[in-house]
Length: 262
Image (cartoon, rainbow, N blue to C red; front, top):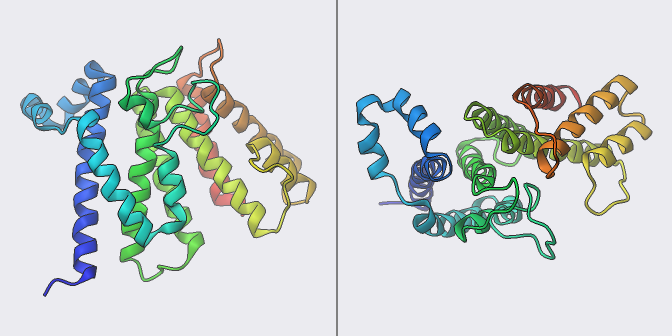
């Protein structure tokens, strides 16, 4: 007899498998030449057949999103708003840049300035990692230990940022690493009951609050401030483009902060 446990496990495996294919499809939609070169390293002479068999992101994503949203609502409800937020355009949005671009914009074919459809890749990576965290949490005997689950999720998100950088999606990789840093600092503030006045604090706001509370020494504070500057360079439409070296430093730096600042 099939139990709910079996059904959830099967549905999660299916979502992850389909999500991986959709991610390859999205890469190919946004950067066909670079994507094909990358796939050739994995599939060699079978690359064209693999590409033909991929789902079509702009038509098949919605079904995946609906199923994943339903499972997250049941198994990891505290991440549901994050999951939905990567799809829906922010309310009251006034500008379209890497900070405000969402998967919904990609599906509608929106692009503006430096933001092309590849602006959706970072958000889909995030959604896929949230689904992976559902499976990890679902399978783990540590189901209710929030801190450990969050740490695993941050590691996965940083791995996704590294992959984006390897694919030369420099801005997206930096933006994703910045999200991890912001969430981690927010959690540190919560752990130590450090109050932040702003409703939606930035990395700088969180960093300053922790320093004022005596949780960070000046060298740590300056390092995080530097990482935040790189993140801002990636997020906002500026004349200067972030370099691969800068974003690599950001990812490495964020990984260190998540392991040393608690």
